[in-house]
Amino acid sequence: MPARPDDGLLRVRVQPRASRAAIGTWREDGTLTVRVTAPPVEGRANAAVGALLATALGVPVSAVRVVHGEHGRDKLVRVTGLSPAEIRRKLEGRRAGGA
Image (cartoon, rainbow, N blue to C red; front, top):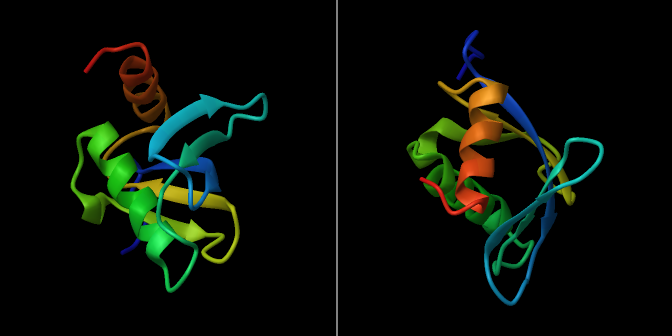
């Protein structure tokens, strides 16, 4: 799917095989830490990251796509329909107990 002007990019650091799936904290460099229980095998961790972020952001799973770093812990994720500012606001609101 081609990029749209309202798409947001999100840098993510993934911890696969975690004891529980969770959105973590923002690192100083602006990268979001994410823990998933799935192993980094056959795209399972990437799928789990997409599903977790989609749920947290209130968007369909199809709107979240790993565009770089498919085989590493550091990933660049595109979220269709949300700006970077909207992504950060929604994720920070979720961490603070908001919607």
